[in-house]
Length: 391
Ligand code: ATP
Image (cartoon, rainbow, N blue to C red; front, side, top):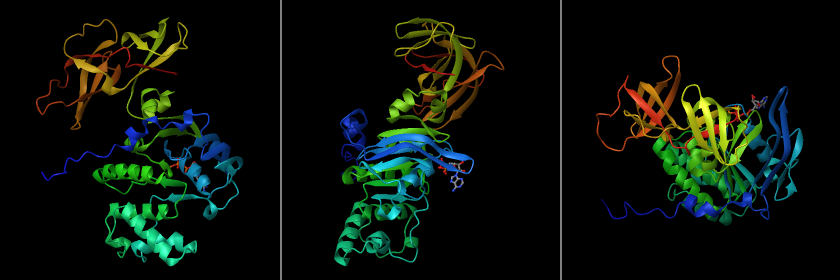
């Protein structure tokens, strides 16, 4: 291996930015504010009374099923759509009526929309020429952008002479050349394969922390959002149902909808039988008595409760675990080998019962697996694994 192959990455933006939480600082001034914004298309309410603040330097990801209003929200921010009611502020100034080209906001589209007949350099400099910048200044900024996206020496090529990943970087360079305060990215990696996506995610994070531009990304790829974002928001029918850092959204989703949209989750129904401090006891028809640790639980005895369990938080064994609670017997119905993990489906409560997913990390190279189809097994989990979800 050549020297430097294992060079440590400079501290990842994620680790540097752990202290970056302007949304918790009452003194912090938002870069963007949506104030009670509604947008209708005929009978469809695409964005519904939505309020949201984004902060300078923030990397914000918007998630939600198709048609929930993500693109409409971004297009209003870029100025391509006008809200029916409410206001959008940038740096404290109402920009609701400001046309797109006069906003310090740029949008990079999924298709990249590069001009095929222009060189890479002319594509990057396009917006600067339209702004009437002097030629030497344009040349300087284009060179700076080419270096930033690591495409030095490729300025004279046409887009069709580049790889998909390189085209993506040209589009990014073109969007950043005018130095917007905010860059909107609609599925920025959709055209890239998985390996290139992963590499590009880190490049994008580095680039963002170098430039200090705020990014708002719409993506269908949860892993991408989790990796890159300071905060993510999950949308449903034009509203934001939860906003928070990725780990909070994943580990403490506010509803079944969010829990099921972000990652895989098993859901068991039960009735609250005891509440002692933060400990909640639930009687589940499928899995017997369960216990979970919930901060300030607001449940009353007898309430129906859904207990969410992420597949990676369940342990599997042939022998009955010693612990008294949070365990259930089942039979293996399906085994899916995914390389890094094996996803096992276990039927609990007999045929016609409930299928629970268990993710086992493949920690050795052994091909013979400890579990096989039809095995009788026990599932068990920690008191801190279960999550109370409102029905
Ligand atoms: P996707 O993930 O599929 O891109 P999305 O979350 O971005 O979806 P939007 O494109 O914002 O969703 O659409 C929200 C709703 O508004 C949808 O019901 C859509 O059909 C509707 N809509 C969007 N643009 C228009 C338009 N120009 N005319 C009519 N209806 C529209």
